[in-house]
Image (tube, rainbow, N blue to C red; front, side, top):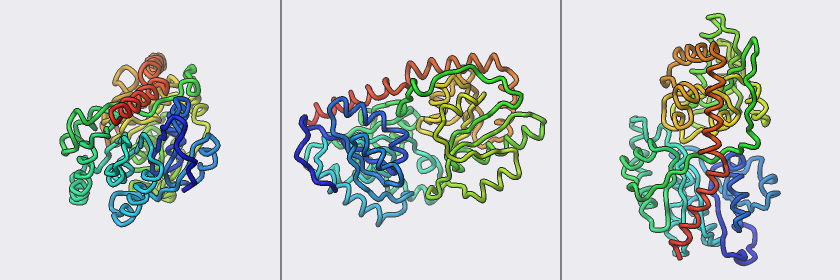
Length: 387
């Protein structure tokens, strides 16, 4: 860890703990910059794989923290937990903001340190760990719930949830009660970057799915819908834009994805950095995910005035309001997805109205300005409570 030059002028260090540097860059960078404007000295503990130089160029201090994928790597997790506790002891930050279940879990030891640090613990999506009833998942829940419950009851910590479904799931699992949680809806959208434009009137409309190549994002269902649409003579282009994520337990391999593309009408464009431009070219944006916290892909699409198709699951239905900003379909149902896409593409005026409502909703409730202010206010209240 780099040498410290004493406490910052206002005594306020903020330490983000995330799994991957790319996630911080895409989801928490704007918040970090606003925190700097508010006087915080910002630090980041994460696994770095390509974004460290860009992050440090913003004046954010980076510390490598090995974070094992999944929740089964107990020995590696213990080492990471000890390292994080040492980082917190050295830095003595005013706030630790841990994002997602694994980073929250790694805070269990650091929260016991007698240094007055407050902890914001952002559960950004619970996924199959809390919803699937396999023997493996039940065993993992028995392992992870007790430390999460202790963190929830810690006098200097608060859990952040992005939707009410996750709140009720955590309470039912025994992780605290209502007073241990606060809801902040997502990580915010830069509405000056993701701007609305008229829907294209292409002969072959673009149906875009912006997502990593993961099974639980609904990639197989999107491929099934693409195949059915092509079989019915629909001229639309179903395009998946997003990178492979080989360390993720839900990942599809390159070979598996290419096989899906070969047997369906699915097109894969890999990861792209020009998402605002791509969204401007899309007529419809789709995310048939199995569960979300609050998907930024849909928020960014809505900010661009794009109508949405998403599964009727936690997180997705926060922004895809059925009949208002898009249409909800059953989870795991490629046929329903195809029928809904076809029906929406046949009604361009209706889609345009949905896109207008979607943009207005993002401006009012999901912009970076709104979300960052709520988060900074939470930091301030926690710092006041710990003095």
